[in-house]
Image (cartoon, rainbow, N blue to C red):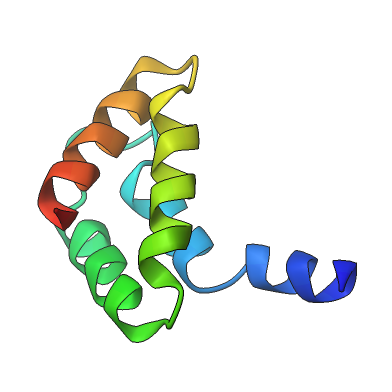
Length: 77
């Protein structure tokens, strides 16, 4: 079970959320945000995973990551 969790953590929604909320971005990554929305709709548990990921990123000590996560949450609702 742990191996499966580690594998899924580095694919799909997780990777795309990292791209969409990357604090190194100078501005919102619209392609990343749209890819995140698309991936949420593709995966059976996409909405539940997205909520956990965004909730974690909104609490980030890196202000840009928090702001980008808030922006992503607005566009996914």
